[in-house]
Image (cartoon, rainbow, N blue to C red):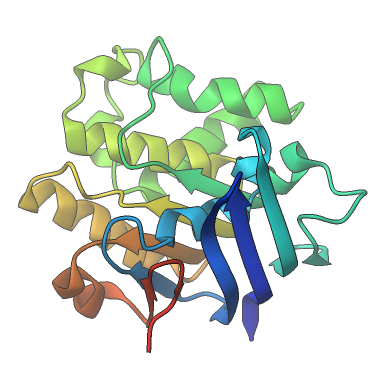
Length: 229
């Protein structure tokens, strides 16, 4: 079963073509890794899936995109699609940790309270579940009110993963999430991602062929804005 389907997807910004005629299907509940050199279109493709190009002046997307969410197939670019609602279904973790000011707990609670009107007990359960799924609970459960900035780089990245997971997306996009981590921290994040396949579809950008071979169920190679042979 597929979770993402693209047909003849192209992206241009002004006179520059970033993606050219991309057609591919990505399977559900698998970890798909996008490989290729810098500038090959991997991150541009990722950002098409949850419309992060909307704020880029002169960006133009053509072709067809569909993502499978809990209510069925959703076209991100259909006239009635709300980008904010789309991103609840299609979450994203960036290359560098994007922390919110305040505590570890607040980094997960704040997005939850903005998106969902949940009772406090339900929020607390979501926080714990997200931290467990990100393989971080055992390291922080006794200091949830400590500043998030006191965490190590690897822990900060897993906190960002937990924050995305707390919103319960069906699809999770990851833009080189281990690029700035050392081997041990990167290994912990990889272990968390492998375990998450049971609940989520994951699409990850990587420059590292060895990493892709190690953790990917499905590898897609990009070159110069196109799919590589």
